[in-house]
Amino acid sequence: MTHEEDQVAGLLLAAGGGRRLGGHPKALLTHRGRPLVEHAVGVLRAAGCARVHVVLGAAADAVRERARLDGCVVVENPEWEEGMGTSLRAGLASLAGTGARAALVSLVDQPGIGPEAAARVRAACTGEDSLVAAAYDGVRGHPVLFGSAHWAGVTASSSGDRGARAYLKEHTAAITLVECGDVARPHDIDTPEDLAHLE
Image (cartoon, rainbow, N blue to C red):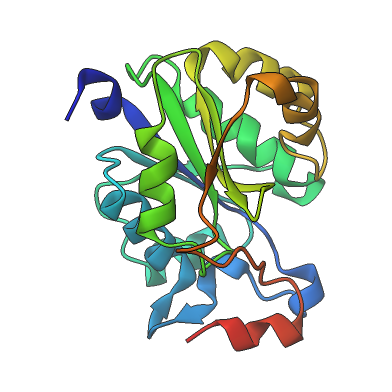
């Protein structure tokens, strides 16, 4: 393991309230018999992230109670209802001063994206200036890796539900796309119909 790889932290955004799922927090959906947030942490760990920060919002106390998040740094986002952008900001702020040179950002509601895809994106990290994203048949998706040189810019442009979309659009030329369509399915769990993707 190179020094760079050792300093890639996992950042899991798991604050959503599941509005279109009848208000059932996404972190607590059941996947393979355990809360979805636990599965997502396991993916980041299996991809090689020794440090994992988890941003919680909706039903944070219940998530802490039901999910095994031992060894994770749990970050509570009081502004989670304003959208994913606030969770990304809170998560990146929590990584400041930790020595992490990059953050591998994943979303709790994409159980079809497993360790292989996350490990490929992580492996493409070359240091603080890295900007890497998984691609599915050439279309940019998650996870996304932000070198620490990008954190201030991402934080400044993240608002509402957009997360880092605006920043990534502005820096398209700098993004290294890593094709993952052969090992992962990038569907979101947003509506009751999507629950079929859970096991």
